[in-house]
Image 1 (cartoon, rainbow, N blue to C red):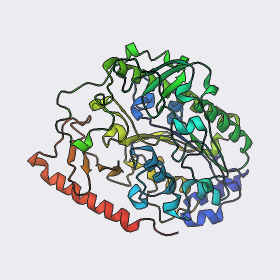
Image 2: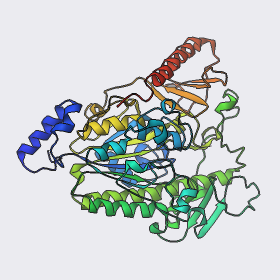
Image 3: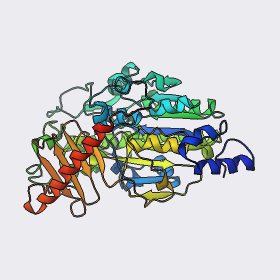
Image 4: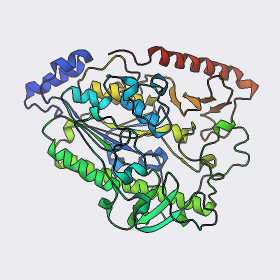
Length: 485
């Protein structure tokens, strides 16, 4: 093995023994600089269906694919909140949204008190920790335009860096797609569907600056253990990227998901997403342009991932560094005529997740995982004590045994309802008392979730069982709440 920083056969044997030791003793026994580095790369608003390593035949992501080719690609990973703030607060704090009460866009610090966040745990254990751009919640595009810290947690980091960019104000060919049925509205700011084929190179924009700073930090800190959080903001709207990234994705070649007549008839009112082709007033041409802009943004982000990975190789520390790639939640691209995040359907709740650990064989894991599992898992892999208060589960065994399971159901929320995602069924309930309605889908027969079975008497027992499981899950979360330690 070459994943121990301390040279010599004896040190390597020590490291192997340490990996087999109980988690609590690892932190005490680990030699100085004998731990993995952690490179945590997170995209914003990225659906796994836009990645070629997850089966996309339209969008090509060779750099993310390369990470997957050397790591474990999880096919059923789920976020705990289907919009930015709650999701990021959850996986960084180690708690479900209903344990902290964070269902909005705030930092978890007030809720968790002096308990260590994921990055802070590494910092407290002697790591250099740095954030580049968006890890905790940060407004996009507003926070990127201003270059501010958003709802960051300063004590989590040794250093932190923002990546200011022009966003929708970038020079180039721009168009407002949302709320612009006659096409006369100029390019506008805010959290809205705008596409800009921008002038200038990668470094002119936020993600290009993020990649450059990450590369710089890797070189500067290659001789000490580090936890580096690299937050790319694309493909979050506005869909802005240099013009060259649009070339492979002309809107005239974009194919929209099928439109099913009566698709919304069996979806409760609270289950109709906050952004739809109807309320956004996006015609078919504008929807195709949205796909073009989204895929161009993904391609631009993927190129920046490639630069960061190249810097890791150039620094000679690939065999000492765990690499994680994920997104804060998924994203609808016209499925059910839904767009963006928030929905509890699979397109919005499921996330790409790739973990590459030195010395581990590449694999594909179909077992259920949650973003909440990253904190305990990566702590365990790096030989740090795993706080027992954490609500995630250690999935490190899956990296050696992809068929290993730690949970039968994944759990996610959106502020209006709850998702329990099992192997056969996806169960969604709006409001705790179900007064907002229920959805049930047979994921073996109806993977696109077109036929809500909740009202079918033949499935009443299934619904009741899931409702009991939901009550138990929420009681467990709240009973454990923030725990201790």
